[in-house]
Amino acid sequence: MNKEKQRHLTNLYTISQKYPGKKTAALLKLEDYGLTIDDFNQYDSLMVSQYIVEPDTVVDEYPTIPGFTQSDKYSDSEVLKIFEARDSVNSVLDNIGSPPTDAEWFQAGVTAEQRIAELRPFYETRKAEEWEELESPLPGLGALTAPLGFLTELFAGGADLRYDFKEDLHERGFGLPEWVPFIGTKGGSGNPFTGFGAWDIAEFKKNPRTGQTGLSPELLAIEDELEKLYGDKRGFTEKIEEGGYRESLPGSKTMIELDRLNTMITEEQLLDPRMFGEAQ
Image (tube, rainbow, N blue to C red; front, side):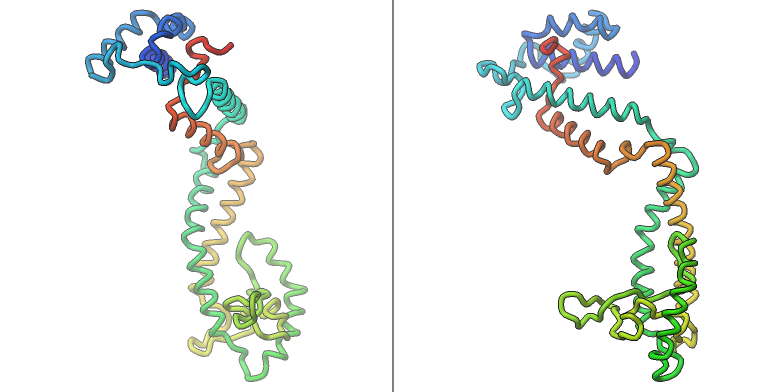
């Protein structure tokens, strides 16, 4: 027996046990799913032999309350709406299809997402630490190199657009110093001549501790790895958009809605009323 038939048999048997008065309706549904009375009886014998159910002991949860057969939280009509809504969501997902998870671009994208989340915080921390050590080559030269930094960023900074993450010129980025109330940030520049960091360029500075100009080779190696990872992530995103797979991925609105409906069904142990002929 295939999985689909097994699922229908399990559902129909559960209905007949939970609601004895609907057993006849459940049995009439067997043929619709390619099942027989023998299949049902064999499954019944199996369940009883394993002490999973005890015949004639399960009754309706709320037999005296009209319209609330399965739950005190949802009326029967609301239960039907829940299952219809889930069918609608599953229909959308069926039309979308599943992305080829074994494709090289898919695997690379998933790996990149995980590695970026792991590596990026360390990169940002070390970059901030190195910026604090960088100084202009000569005392007082910072004010003179600032206009040069501005012009360099203006005419050459656009070349960075060809990258997914890395830069040829590493500017500190606009940010006011930490002591500025409310809007100051850690690592922010206090130098107005550099546009408060907007055109404060590492390649024009030197680390007196190491004697190196600009950021360290170790940090730039991490940046190169992140560049490749962000390239893989971009390729993944483009393929997902091209195939229309966005809504079939975890975290999408469609998948969140499906999870919500399944949670409602599971928590209340709801059964689709259409399985035993209660909804037309």
